[in-house]
Image 1 (cartoon, rainbow, N blue to C red):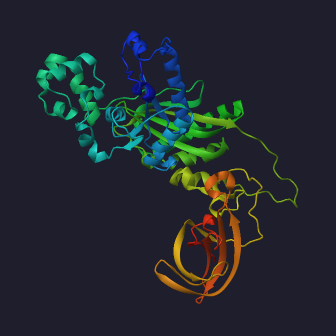
Image 2 (image 1 turned 45 degrees about the vertical axis):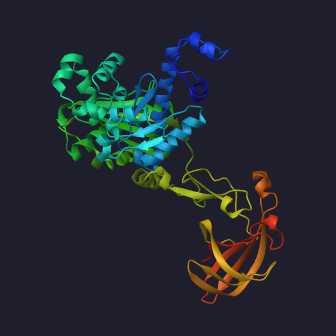
Image 3 (image 1 turned 60 degrees about the vertical axis):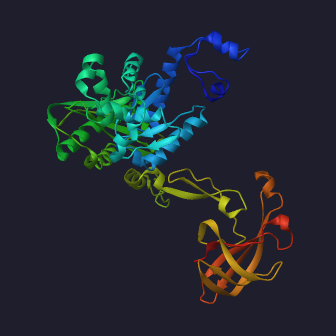
Length: 464
């Protein structure tokens, strides 16, 4: 057996077990031949999918892992923690059970990912050594015979290996033990060989002498973008993800990724977005080659400009939104859109800033507060049942006397959401206190029947 999932392990099966033993434990077990070539092809397809959506540098960590260099790209996804959870969630939606780890080195990320039970882990930069010290030596990607030999010497944890004398180990097991340990701890750089998309639109330039100044890098970007846009125009495409790889003389690569809300092939606009990222580039001892690749493209639609003098052309905000989104991240820019639901917190959703207008509107027959709290907050009240507004209420430690009120507006639960909402109702009131501040409060229940709600009061919004 090559692998065993959770269901198989519950039946007593494990990887490495002979098939005859597995069939004896589980009668009727279906046995199929392994297809390592198909597994590798699927892993490469998954790598290209992540390269288009997450980070420009994605490599295979055979036989069952992927390595992503997210430097310069994680801010587009809301930070490392949000990005890792999003990757795991997307893969789970596709039927792929995965764990994601962000660490300062490839070796440390590999070791933690294969030993942790958490779905998403971020290893702090200053805590890498302590984080992997108690992990088994097998997590260092060493051959089984070397791991077995170290085990006979009493070296079972990475921390034990780090404190052991190196010369005797190198003499007995070769240089690989120290190399893997140093790679995991960041003492030795480990190159990452990224997968490349099939027939991408790209432009490259090699330099006779290494460059490092920001002005020189900007000029080089200016020479790479026009031929890339010409390639996009020839295919009728616009770019949504653009990756700039800067190969340094020390064999390391710096990566810059920009994203656009709509397909773009405007050379000046793309060059400006790339140049804003120059300050994030560490040129080291110099950059000897630059490669600009359109990782994610879409067909671009051409449209006729308004020619009539009486017709107003809609303002194009996509350029401004792209600039802001590449500074603060795509997730930080959104707009609110209506959802067909009477329950206030379900009647609004976030959509991308440049998402098409769904032509839906919020109903206007009842006024809604300008600010809806993320979660209704409980308040203390004095009110007559079943349908009177409160005489006063206490919110966040402040007692407010109600001067006038309007309501109730009854909102019924959505029975299709589950049995818990079959009989629930909310009675909303617009109230104004003696200082003139106006609030949106509700009672959970109809004031008479216990099955309709808890009969407690909540504050849900604030009017302007």
